[in-house]
Length: 114
Length: 110
Image (cartoon, rainbow over all chains, first blue to last red; front, side, top):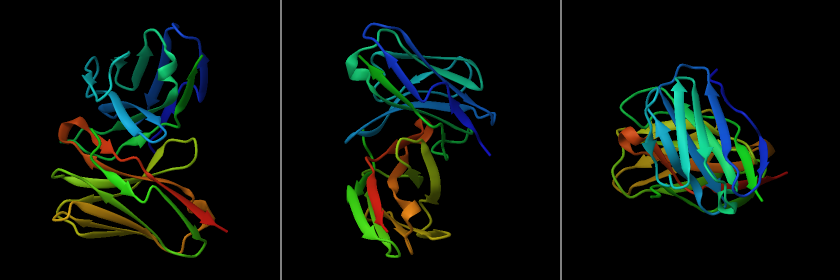
């Protein structure tokens, strides 16, 4: 079974703090994704990565950055957290294909920024 | 931008009844997928249907795809309380992965 883990289920941070959300997958998948999920807005893609050290902006990259130093790990960074970044953050991975393949999700991190 | 849009936004039925959810999308696709999310958890892949397929089954799930109408439906037969969850359709966006709809929240009343 594919396993995608996220470092925290719940996180509370203060405005202006630097926040790291970690995601690890154990299936040697090439593709990894970060989404945020908000009521009424569904899932929105923040960043994704096709390979180590590669990253691509999704639909809402502002205020975020990512790091992929190893194939199995994809980190989402909030350089200076703001209250409008309070959300559920979901990480996913998929094998490399021509695109649009099944994605495997982690359990999510619910981040609250005070 | 949102590609898939689910309908209805919320659905409440009695246990044992069938639940039908619909998804409409705007542009051409290679495949369409359905995912389930239990409250406060990650998404779980249910089924994938390719653009050259019209119907697909998996257990109590039946998915149809009508590319001429740019729509898909997910039918859950003989619903159970454990089927209570949010259901999302997702359309492929080529090399950039998937675009998810806003979901249908399904409640199964015991």
